[in-house]
Structures are given as structure tokens and as C-alpha cells.
Amino acid sequence: MKFFIDTANIDEIKEAHSMGMVDGVTTNPSLIAKEGRDFEEIIEEICEIVDGPISAEVVSTDTEGMLEEARKLSKIHENIVVKIPMLVNGLKATRKLSEEGIKTNVTLVFSPLQALMAAKAGATYVSPFIGRLDDISQEGLLLVEHIVEIYGNYAFDTEIIVASIRNPLHVLESALMGADIATIPFSVLNKLAAHPLTDKGLKAFLDDWNKAKGAQS
Ligand code: E4P
Image (tube, rainbow, N blue to C red):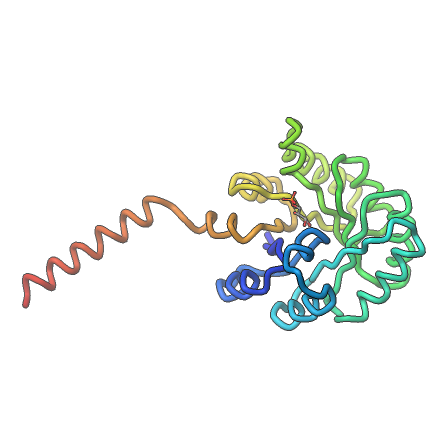
């Protein structure tokens, strides 16, 4: 399973990258706005750190506007993937961009049929938002299960990026289902590595070691 990091924060990206855990990066307009810096400047910086797909989102909602933004974004770096919202206009833009060889990530996907349409439009990636479904008492992971099954039934090349991840179980269950990618917030990435028995075991090892050293001196 590929791990993308879901942030526009350069320090978080550098730290996760140094852990060897970053195969790509996803951003969105809210994450970019949180940084209070120029959009293109942030994206350029991310491309210098991570050699993998970097998602940058359009803010237009009409097809022509999306296409114009997408073409501009794709010129920043060869690793840019243009995030397109799951709208009818977005599907039209996705189709055109796929013909032009520009990679797309159809975002804000909340149903299996939206994911099917994104794949038929030629999306490179599709992003089901599972945490936001859980927030309204719908099972986010069931959406991933359905998309994995549909894409498998018809051998679509579109890769599934499980998005809106809130906890380690979201990552575990997505991996068990065979989702291609999890885009993970930095805080959740750290939780994946942690286990109380690791900490307890290490403390016991070090205590024993230091006791033995003390006895020898
Ligand atoms: C994905 O590409 C989005 O940036 C992100 O996962 C949304 O997560 P949120 O629902 O926690 O905002």
C-alpha cells in the first residue's frame, strides 16, 4: 500500500519523508489556506522534497476554468496530479485532461457510483472521503469496499486514494481491502508507528541494561 501524506505543511512533509513513509502528497484548498502562503510556492516546495504524485486542487467549478487551472498547475512539475471536484463539470474536465495526458485525482467522492463515473471519465486517482461519511453516521469504509469491488470487476486502472482518514483503523481496514493508497494526516501517521508494548518492552530492556552496567562499575 502506498502512503501519501495529507498536508500542505512543509515541516510535516519533511519529517514524514525522513521516516521513508511518503510516496506522495495530497493537498486541498483548506490545507493550503491553513499555511497562509502562496499556493504555487508551496506546491513547488513540496515537489522539491517528494519524488511522487503531488495533488494540487483547482478552485473553479466550471469546466473551462478547471481546465485552465489544471493546465497551469501541471506545468509546475511533472509529478503534479490535478485534483478535480466530483461534479458533472469535473467529469468533463477529467475526460479532457486524461486525453491531454494530465493526471487527475477526482476528489470529494462519497458514493460508489461517483467513483465509477470518475473511473469511466479516465481519472488517474479517485479519493473517497471516509471520515466525513463516518461523521454523518454512514460507514466510510464500506464505500472503499464497494469501490475496490467495482474497479476489480471491470479492471479499471484508476487508483483508489482513501482520504479523510481519521485513525489507524481506517488505514488498517483499507489495507486489508486492498485499496491502492491511503492519504494520511501527519498525526495519524505517528499513531500507526506507536504501540504501548513497544514502549514498555524498550523501557524494560534499557532498565536491565543500565542495572547490569551499574553492577559492573
Ligand atoms: C484528501 O485528499 C483530502 O485532502 C482530505 O483527506 C480531507 O480530509 P478531511 O475530511 O479530514 O478534511
